[in-house]
Image 1 (cartoon, one colour):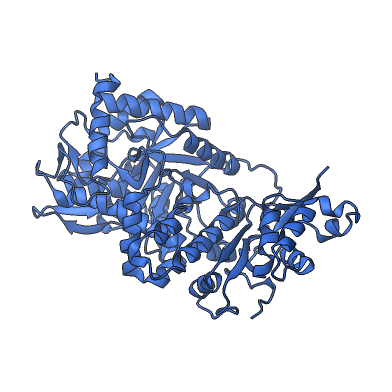
Image 2 (cartoon, each protein chain N blue to C red):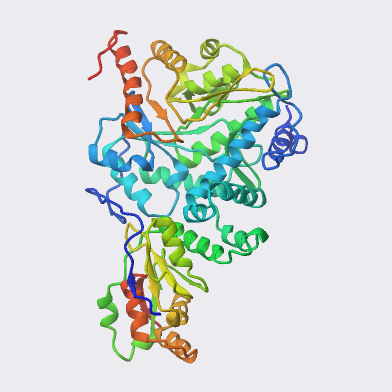
Length: 316
Length: 261
């Protein structure tokens, strides 16, 4: 038996778009401010749709951890998209709410991605995801106490000084509370923003999910939220369930359309605080580009209605 | 204020919460409460489920051929077992699963599928090549223009994406069939030797004659052409210097060359 020497056909058929290629020696990007329009989370499933259609989109947001490889197609695609659109960088693995010191190696990689793509916005979560040595790949909750407050502020100081810019901190969706908590979440976030100088990323779906799970009013939560610090808004879909005591249990699944009550809360929030860059998050059961961009359209209509003095504007 | 590190409520709470995430039989940690102060296993279970299912998903994304070979249910059970013993130690999940092939190899219920571990090794190499650093490819002219007296002292520098694989089984063919859903040549050949690399945007798998494998791996260990050829020839078994070199150059597995002084 003999083997035919030579290169087999490539396993993945990659389409090369204009300006796309590995090892591009481009000029450094100028930071493009993320506008107060809607954007979507960038998914590999939509790379080709975006590069072919060049849709009108306020911005794209990427998970920093997906672009920490040394090279290859992910960077080639992101470079091509970054050339045409404002970018927001969203970290999911830094474990800012963790009890132990931040992972210096991971922070260095985050800085590398940040410096390479010069995003207009940069955000992370009020949550933890690592407990040495394990990384759990979930946004886990922490009690709100003076001790955890001091630690989170310390961690944000470190992030902002290493990255060299202000970050936004996102409010979590939670399924449990801690007996040890001493502060309300809104109070905790207000104090963090005040002490660290960070901005806040207001996830309206997270507000609705947590409020439903813990039995409080999302409107009252939003009333108490330190909205002057909000630099970005997230919207996503949640999955309904119930706990063993018959209480509502909403899961922050990011696997479907934004629900109607969340749209209503969002519209009310924009009316109150003004337009902000607004992201549609859809991270599993990824829909077609048409479905995802329709969600972004819906957010854009609410933003434009606000900018036109509260009068709804017909879709283009 | 509880700033004393030795009595950190924060660390204790986190530790207790983390303990049960990879252990399905662990109780809900103390102080973790549901809506009306109940102890809700279902609510704590949401976190546990998120952790395990998201990590199973990450492994499935990294090992689609292994998933296809085992079927979704078996893969899920195997991956959950791997995750419990070897959770990721950093947050970049495209780098998670380096130990999966060894785990498969030593997993007793899979002992009668001895080729699986080699398929997983090739799949891991494919993923690593996909995300590896970009680098130029050696211009074959550069090698051709080396003088005959310098030629034995040439050291070929492997491309950062390139790795060599030898399997007693048709591992590369099985990998390709289960990744590409296509019948590939060489499917019955064994043993198999391949090089995995990504010269530009696409990852390639190129065949080399098993008889030329010793030579190729010597080059990958930074031996000179002369040393590698001597080593390969002493092993006997049909080594062919020209054929080996041409296959490696055609597969674009080198980025540069140096002449050793």
